[in-house]
Structures are given as structure tokens and as C-alpha cells.
Length: 105
Image (cartoon, rainbow, N blue to C red; front, side, top):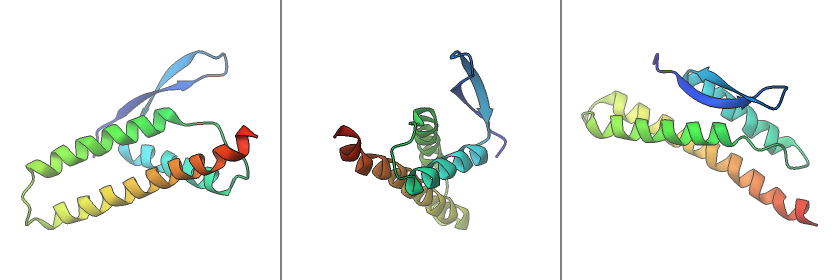
């Protein structure tokens, strides 16, 4: 997987810079954001650029799986990986949503 993904990051001056990540690095960042959010007592800064890129990556993976042979073992492995990524993403978003009532009051 040599495909690289772009997303905008904020630099220290408030401007935006483009960061290029491989899919593996993107998933690593999602997992780090998920763990940080899960164990932080308060709502952390949102990571919409990571969420958006992961969702786009999942769409590309789904398109690739539709074109692949169903009997291939690699297809099953890729489907399991997609489900794992979906779980991490939804858990990250769920953790954030559960903290909202605490932030409102």
C-alpha cells in the first residue's frame, strides 16, 4: 500500500499546512486519537481531518473489494480490517458524543 493521503493540519501560526500520510499512518493517528479520547476525563480537541480521511479511505477500500473476487482469502482479510477500522472510528465518535452532556452544563 504505497498510496498516500492528504489532509490539512494546523501549524503554530494558525495557518494550515498539508500533511501527507500513508493509510497505515492515518489509522495509527485514528487509534491514538481514539485512545486519548477514551481515557481523557473531558472532551478533547476534535480531529475532523482524521475522521474525514478515514471515511474516504473506507470508501476506497469498499470500491476495491467490490471489484475483487469473492472467493479470495485476501478479500476476507480486507473485510475484517475494514470492520476493525469502522469499529475504532465509531468508538472514537461515540466517546466524544458521550462527553457532550458534561460539556454543556
